[in-house]
Structures are given as C-alpha cells and as structure tokens.
Figure 1 (tube, rainbow, N blue to C red):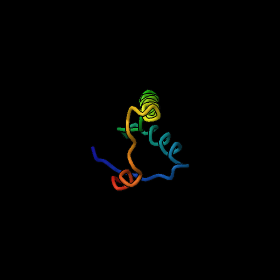
Figure 2 (figure 1 turned 90 degrees about the vertical axis):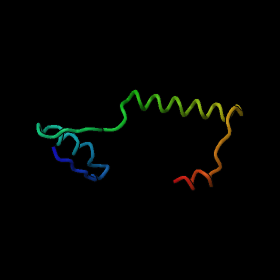
Figure 3 (figure 1 turned 135 degrees about the vertical axis):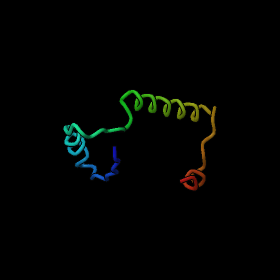
Figure 4 (figure 1 turned 120 degrees about the vertical axis):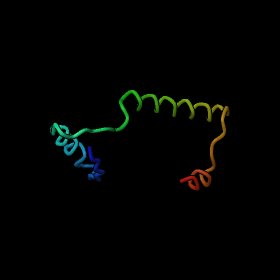
Length: 69
C-alpha cells in the first residue's frame, strides 16, 4: 500500500473526509483525537489550572514557553 499526505482547507476538510471514506480502496489511519481523548485532555487541563491557582504547581514563564516552540 502506498501513502499520500494531503493538505486540505479547514472549511473543506469534513467534506473531503466523507468523500474519501466512501472509497473502498482508501484506508484512513488517523482522524484525530476521539471524543473520549478530548474530554480527558480537557479534564487534565482544568486540573492543572486548578493546581496552579491553588499554588500547588508553578507556571512556565511565557518566554520559556515560546522558546520551546
């Protein structure tokens, strides 16, 4: 099987995804995070924010954060 990487405009992504799903010879490996993964990530983020507000953890200075990018 060959692999192809495509870039699709955000507003056309859902349409394109549905189109290629209808093709029996196309295998889609990763459609993004599942609903459960998104909820788990949000819960983790809120817990981290709560710990920061309570002074249990320290934040990262914006300069350090931007330097990591």
